[in-house]
Length: 155
Image (cartoon, rainbow, N blue to C red; front, side, top):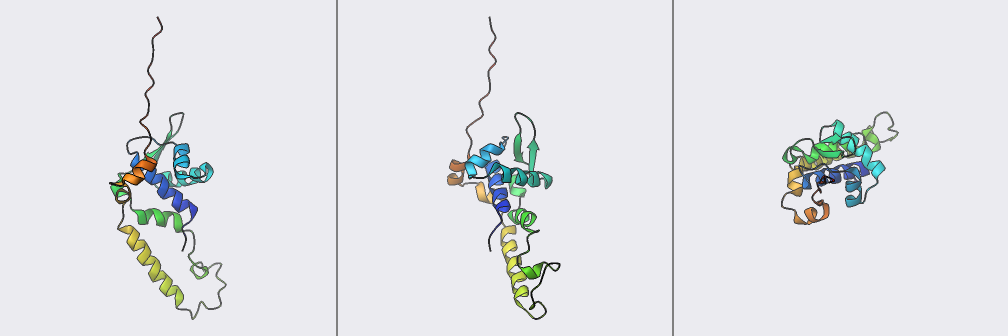
């Protein structure tokens, strides 16, 4: 089993937002910190926004931040949102299934059970579980405090 790039990027983006909670994180900052393509990331961020995992802000000072508290973001739900459209095996997609064993094969039932266990395990993990008290992740993803621009009056 292998996760899609989109799922991987979704979790990276969410972890970056969680580590920098309360701050608007820019797409290029996530791409740089997570060694990701900004083009792939843009699609992922759009989906995360549509699913309300993040709030997106447009404009010069735009970016994204968590849409709900990190302890309310369930990792299993994120995986399902991004992996649901990708059939695990050919027999999981009735329209394109050409496997001649489908009528007699018991492997599909075993795979369904294994996938349920996989997602069940992820359902017990929140985004907060991944980032809180994780000093190593914080070192990798924490952004420097934003500098406020001072307005200087000319005499």
